[in-house]
Image (cartoon, rainbow, N blue to C red; front, side, top):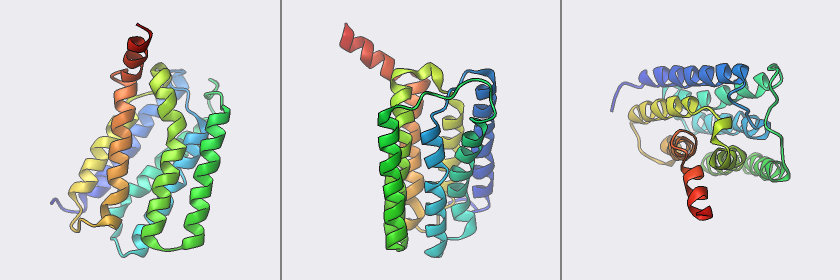
Length: 199
């Protein structure tokens, strides 16, 4: 394991990746789904608070904090750019509502590990509209924020000294979710699969 101060570097890398997404938004290359980025700004903060409540150090949980702050930056910016955000559909609203239900269940339980489970579920449901959009319309997303996030997550995981649920559950989930986003956006796996189905 590496020194936990590297987690601060990981958080900075994650924010840097978000800046690349913001630039693509202003250029009109990225059209974010507000449901996704709004929810993604809340769920990691719950995981972050839960990690602290389970005595996970700030150094080992700061990367998770950055996973909430970065989407918040994107969400706010959707209201500032002249290019339109992705049109919200019924599926997006359903995922957002289920995600908020997950957050409510966290609030009702108030127990650290259960909160982490609900925050992962809420985060995934919030991310699902963007993941689906990335599968069918990868040109409307920017892969770099997810790539930077992968590097940040790996660095964050390398600082972990205790491999238990509260330390690694959320980062491992982020690692997996970002991997699928990169495959869909950068490698256009969804387009390839759809083309094979049509062919």
